[in-house]
Image 1 (tube, helix red, strand yellow):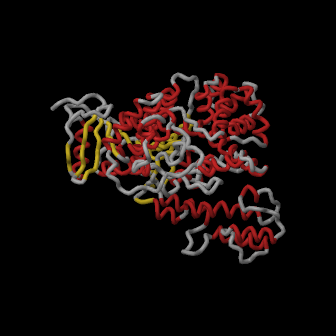
Image 2: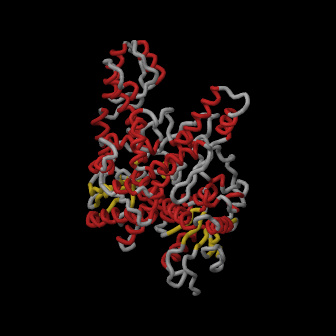
Image 3: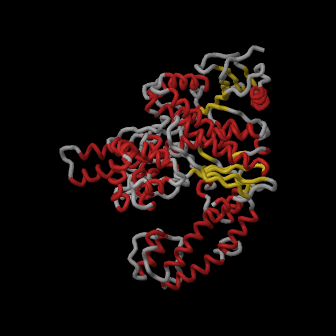
Length: 598
């Protein structure tokens, strides 16, 4: 049998008469004869390629397919794991919008059926940002306008309505077009690494969904019962919520109040003489009234019941596993989202229900202060990099004399990355800029570019969307002959809002790239550590949350897994930033349940 060239790519393409396997080299040239097989034959044939029996000993080709989420689950169900892939859908989205490939045939071509496969992050709403979920992002300091990165991303124009199944979804032709785009890019190494990391992330997501997160329904029920009272009958509130409701009604003199209705609650608060414009918890905390403590407790427990109560348990946990459906690249920065189940928003109250199997452990790793370290590495700011070598970067900033207290250091850094210009963070910004001019200069430059409606890019080349046509119209009106002062204020406000988006895009997006490289390296290392054992019989990834991950491991390998987790985090930093003098320390815990790691 003829030996194929190194780095062979095998395209899996669906045709009217079956599945076509087409071996190609890195440039998209033929590297073997195409073969037509039935869909039922795919798992066995892929397994032969993976083991080298199809290619005289050469193993692990790069599988090229339209969408990992469509092709890989069936292989996993058949007991077939693949080492590498090219996810054409995810790669097309990156190459279509990246500044590095802006002049390529792929980027300049009219929109087509491949573009219709891109995830739709949000729809714009006139000239104001539509609110879209942060998909589990940790709370951030809010800019003056109360807008977040995820709000602002929604101002970009949406793609045209999705096309139906189209003959132009030719995987071989698309692969060749993508390879041409990479070869002609302004930095092939960077964009190649991003595409490989994104595709590896798609494999990880499919494997985590297949394996599932170990989950004890009994423990979950005990947690809920302890916090809420026994499981109520349908249509009734749990006992603790009912008791809190009674206290709230009596304190407000509203005996029929439904606190789950913001409109009813706001009216009841106003009738009780409380001047409040919203029912958000942070607004209520400023009020001194007997109704407020039970109301805040009610809201907290009601959120738990709604998001992760008994109905969630019934719907999402089966056979001792929670199988979240991750959406790779579901946020414009490259962060992941989930399609139901709320995996990226698991509250601490129920993490104790994530319990390792008997004889197994959970290895939980959390990257400490990731985004400030990413900023230090991106900018090449040596003084900030020096602070980044410490386990506690904020404390190191204080020790350097740049900022007086750790609390101020944290507020200032988050304000710099998220564009908060008021309050304490705004007051501290000049001091921070003086101490770390290159780092602050990088995010300031990104903000100014956004205010001008320009594109910014991450370290590896994922580029931000442009503001939409509604945004552009507001800017145009503001500088017309008939513009009013109100028009100009509105334009400035929207420009600053988009600048806050691009300011954080470069940092958060690069942090997402680091996390992808970390997971890709860890996935490979776990497979090697197990000697090639099947996915669920060996240490395997079961959970990921932006800068935190969980590995389910046989107890005897848990400490080795912990070391591998640390080593691959270091490797990810070097892969993206070279030998930049920034460290990415982890908090790693080997535990029996997820709740013990916090």
